[in-house]
View (cartoon, rainbow, N blue to C red):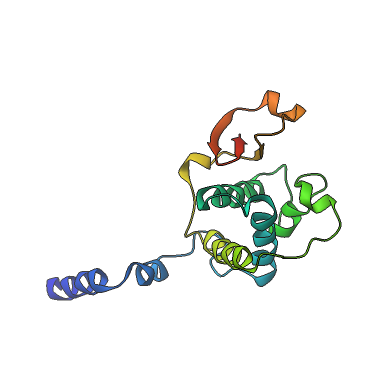
Length: 155
């Protein structure tokens, strides 16, 4: 019995970190993200934060996911992203993807976030954000949890 247990531990040590992730049970229904969810989250990352550092792009994605888990917001990734007047880019005419490199990065990040492989613990409670250039009326009643790049994040 001890030999078998030792072999299992040894096998786990030799596996790559990605292989270890595959052995862990899924933490939520997004362990294998749907293409529609990946695209909706990637569009939000792209349009809200493509000029930001990776940490800022992850923060935008995390706010989207935090809203998904919160009862006051829509119950799907696309529902959260396209909820009326929540993200300014959705109010304008359909936007095309002009920066292919930024779009591909947003797709990759979206897949990581939806499969629980990327998050920022500082932002577990963040539900709102805006750029530093504006001061929306709703921000007065919120608590700042982080300032990342050009965005201020609130819970």
